[in-house]
Length: 141
Image (tube, rainbow, N blue to C red; front, side, top):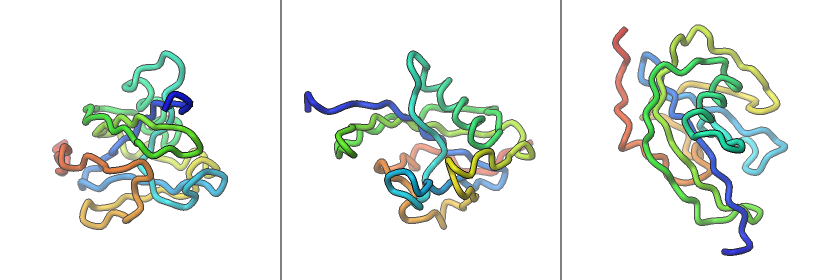
């Protein structure tokens, strides 16, 4: 594994007031094109995983993070084009869902909210989502 590149990635389990999870489709220009994924991206430079997920959520959805909880890290032992991914997962409640907008259709062609019982089967391109660590409930306002 010495010749394998390693990348740190963050993924957010963004939950709305009804307990649904936000997911977007991958663009045609990326590996796994068209599959559903949790919002997130690659951690930049000296950025922390917390800072990275807040930046990624804002850049892709225009949502500000109000409540953020680290759930754990998954190491994808399978390589994709010679890269091993270290994926950190966060449970996220946005500050104001009315701020949501589809910022860049080239990065994620489609966004949708899914109840936990009806998530797309191919939702996670990196491995198991740690859903057992997330409390899915409607947020009390």
